[in-house]
Image 1: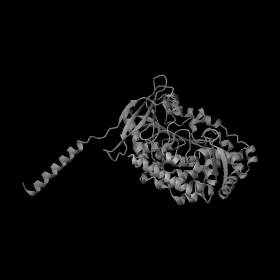
Image 2 (image 1 turned 30 degrees about the horizontal axis):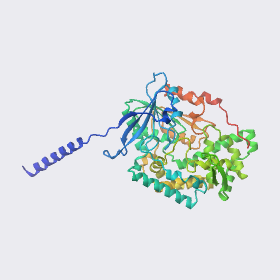
Image 3 (image 1 turned 90 degrees about the vertical axis):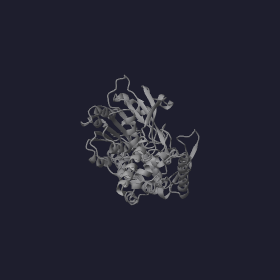
Image 4 (image 1 turned 135 degrees about the horizontal axis):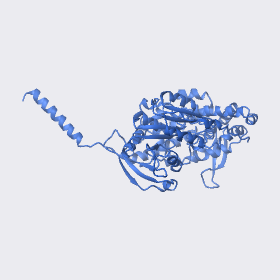
Length: 506
């Protein structure tokens, strides 16, 4: 055999060997196994419900690597005759456990099977990425300014300890990102044999839903978003832009209310004065913890950044129970009255004013850290944040110098490509609710985002904070009717009948 023939023969043999080797390792296929539902599901879901675990790859770039399990809840509407095309719900916010009881009535409202998936790293999915090392710092952190060098060092050490413990358990923290979670969603659909479904999301979980349609849009019939965030705006930027927008709405509504405008005549300047005053001379209050046992007192330091974070939480409070008190709280702080703010801060020093929902359901810090540090923090522009803060000490301390930036220095999970920060383009029918008082997202951001979402209908909901659908029947009825014909504009007439809140005088 001549040299060229030998070469050709060997090449063909190598190709044959390679093909045999590839075929000997079958493609990984996710598997779903039904099992008993845990008590926190069965005690709150009153219609037929089943549960199970879906086994998927932890890191899809490693086909022979470790697997994890995703907890899936399937809720049937009463009557046993659901409409086609189930509804997937992606939870409330990144890192949170789904509110099973809160979501369950949706199955009846739109007469479709409701599917809840605990995001990887959270809830009943396995493993979970809680960070008790960070949680234990609670009282220590509220007893100091978050800009305090020792407080920052303690936080960094706690984050490093959590990171080391989880990686020591063999967990690949870099795999708990938006791309992998979006792939989890598609694996759920395939494993359950669903040809087409609807997707709903709330708050920052919208980042997952939008990543799903960036990657796997073909099987989505329609989507609805409640007070969403969009990938092109990171959460630290939203801390400034969203809070400023919501506070402008509050100030305008107070000015339009004769009683409020008489008692609090210049809310915007009063807030600026309060933040500067507290930055110069922080106030200290000893309060009873909102979550602890009766009689458990906590020392809380309220500076400009802490006060601003508390106000942001009050403005966005879903049932408007707190927003009515915002003008009085701002003016009260000018007279040294910060007890309410201190109580709010006492329980959730690293949540309040950073996350829209604090304390209601278990929060898995590690899962949130991995998404924040992989998919958002790499695109934060410090100079842009500084410019947006405009020298305001409250915004500077809370968001420009956010402790979450320190977290990402210790939480090594790599960085997403720039695609993760780009707007999503789609013609899938979408219904998007934005609350006028929602400081964790804002109408201008939503208006900009929908320029590339040609099938979307944007509903501006005045006087409402975070979680529009959790408040009044009007908003739920709009959605329920729209679902039946999602390519037509929703009938939003009932919104015109809803008036502004009555602000408290003291």
